[in-house]
Image 1 (cartoon, rainbow, N blue to C red):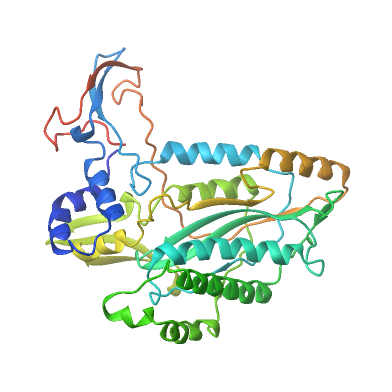
Image 2: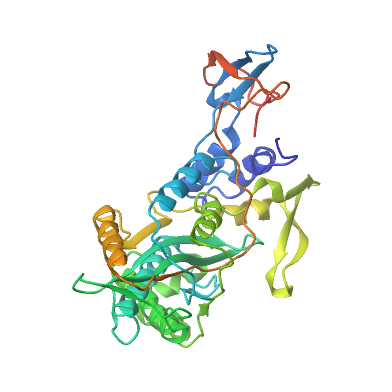
Length: 396
């Protein structure tokens, strides 16, 4: 069933005015995302006509935009990602916590092109270095890292979710090195090393000319000014969150899959669009997870949503170590061989258990809404053959 209000509706009503007011500040990627979401599942993208083989019901279904930022798309991609990851699971148990690290929530360094790669790469390198240390684990590591840039209120809050097997092949590849049953890696060491690697990566991007500042931040283009500006972050305590998982690895992957192909906010959290204001539900984790309602001007809602549009070509889901795409099949075969020869079972750890967005499928060929019969394709609709905003029979 189509939600009463969608992000697409907000863009259609207020997107044109927002584009006009922010002509010089919107990136090409942001404009493309707005256009794709506005056109998603409308006649602008074409579609097809189906007829039920049982009762003869006619249904028109319009094509999806397939943009990775669209709240209505990517359901099938997320389902395929989950199936692929579950097929790769190793026989593991769960200790009570993981000690991952993420950058502090801050708008002080707003440029995504340099900051987001530093966050993901820095997190992976932190885990690799500490896991390889014989004092901690002494093993090759594997990880799946998913970058998120948003909080429940849509503010810019970059952080990295990681799933990390609690063990790995020894450096010589001859045996499996497992972590302790109730412990993976030390949080104090993780957060300090990640802070250093992240800021060093940011400094390197600045020195390579990949990080520039404009308007009231233009003074930071001076190397001494930039160094002074970043210096307090080297002393600020960085965020580390650890929580015991409540289920096995399949449930953890299912939880994370709800996020891998979603951005910012799900349509089912939107409540109303009235008087140029948007009302939506959010969870206040600073007050024991209380459910609240936030009201934003439509312009501010669009601004916050567009904060989370990623640069073109940026990979938000990444695989590292023995889970890296280039040699995953070979390395997983070695891991299973070593586990079969070992009397010790490793552990798997995961992070974060915030309420996920509800998945929305973008699969066609749903059964007939009247008799649940099979729908048969009878015609194709070219793009923009019908008015841009006709009644839509199927938007689920």
